[in-house]
Length: 315
Image (cartoon, rainbow, N blue to C red; front, side, top):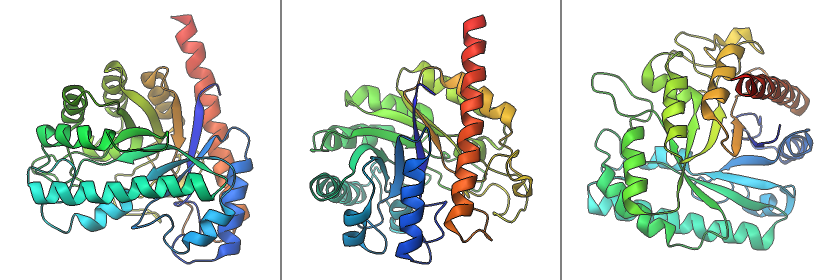
C-alpha cells in the first residue's frame, strides 16, 4: 500500500482493561513489526497511558503514533456543556485546557520515548448542542499551540440526529467542514467507517459521506472499523464497538463487508492515511491471537486498496 497505515492498538490489546505489561509489550511491538503498519493509535485518558506512563515511555516502539483523547472526552461529556464545539464558554474553556495538557504530553513523548506523534485527533463535543461557530473559535486557539510537529485532525463521530439514540451525538460533518474553513486553521478530517454507519443507520450510505469528506479537500484519513445492526458477542446494535470485518469474524455480524471496504477506500481517493480500528474477540486474551487478527485485516485492506487502484486506473 502506498498510503500510510495506522492500526489502533488499544481495542486489540487484552491488557487495555486488565493491565499486564508483558501482554501490552507483545501487542505493541508485534503490531509495530507487522508488514505495512506505519503508526499505532493510542488513547489519551487523562494522561499518556491509562495504567503506567513511565512504562509506556520506556517501552513504546520506535514508531509514529496517532493520539486519540476520545475515551477521555466521553467521560468528560458527563459535565454539561463540555467540548471544543460548545456554545457554553465555560465548557469550551475546560475542553481547551485539557487539550493543552494533551499538547504537553505529546512533547513528553517526543522527549522521553522512541516514538513520535504524527496525528492528534480532535472531537466535536458536546452531545446534541455542538456549534460550528464555537468550534471555529476553538480551532484557532488549538492550532496555535505547539503540537511538536503532529498533524491535527477532527475525527468525525456519529452526529446528533433528532429522534435517534446517539453513541456520540457530536457535530455534523458539514458543520465540522464549515468550522475548519471559517477558522483558517490547518486542520484535517479523519473518518471512521463504523461511526458513520452508526450515524446514518445504514452501511451503503457510508461511502457517500466519505466522498463528501474527500471532496472537501480536507480528508487526511479513513479508518476502517465495523458496526452492526444486531446483537453479537462484540456488542448490541449500533454500538461503537469497533467490529471486525465481516469476512474475518462472521460471529461479529459486522456490516463492514469486503465490498464495502473497497467502496470506502475508493470513495476516500488519495487520502494520505488509511487505518484499522478493530476489536479483539472477547475471548481472545493472548497477544498472538490479536496479532493474527490484525494481520488478516491488514491483508484484507491491502487487497481493497489494490482493487481500488485498478478501478481508478480503468476510469
